[in-house]
Every structure is written in C-alpha cells, then in structure tokens.
Length: 146
Image 1 (tube, rainbow, N blue to C red):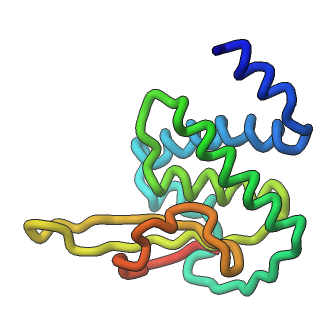
Image 2 (image 1 turned 90 degrees about the vertical axis):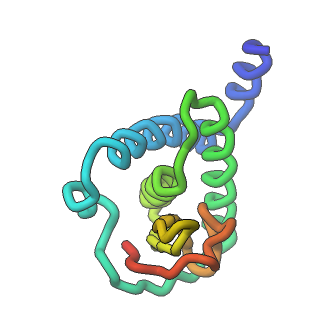
C-alpha cells in the first residue's frame, strides 16, 4: 500500500505535487495556530478584516482551486487528528495566496443546543467555495478576512 501511494505521489505533475507538499505544511501550521494561539495574535496573517474584494476567476484559476480542494481532502484523511473547518480554511487561503488567487475567509456562529454557540469557517474565491461549504447557510457571518 505504501508503494502504491509513493507511486501515485510521483505521478502527480509538478504544480500539484508542490501544492500537496504545502498543503501538508499549512494544515500542521494552522493546527498549531488555531489550537494554541489566540486569534487576535495571528489575525493579521489572514488578511484585511471586513474588506470585500470582487474576484472573477478564469479557467486556470478554477482548475487550481479544484487542485487545492482535492489536496486538502487527500492530506487531512492521513493526519492523526480531525482537521477543523477553521484550519482547513486557513490552509486553503494560504495555498490560494501562493498562486495569486484572492479569496475571502468567513467566520460564522449559530446557537446550538442548550444555548451554546457553534462556530464555523468557510472560504470562497469569487462565487466558488473552496472549503466549509457544508452547512454554512445555518451560520450568521460575524466577520471575514480578504
């Protein structure tokens, strides 16, 4: 099985392999940020707060977004922890920055059972979801980073 995965990795084109490697790095980096450091200490790396930027995507950019989404799914299933939506959104945002694609990271909340607050993060580039699409409609947006 390990040989099969190595063979699959080697068969990827250069760009996809580069994105896959950086996906691994950013998922670990985001894990440390989200779980150990308060947001106010690292929010500057997420972008400009509450600033809207319109993005029009061309075919090449849409393909790169697809590659980023696919590689995040690939890597996160091999990590020894459950990747949270905020970690995934940070990773996707940084990977898109690497290929000069603008995106917006949204933060939302909703009331859960017993008056608890649930939080969710999702990333969009233009009108395309990069991460966190599932269930985002039930959350009220409290802020976003562009």
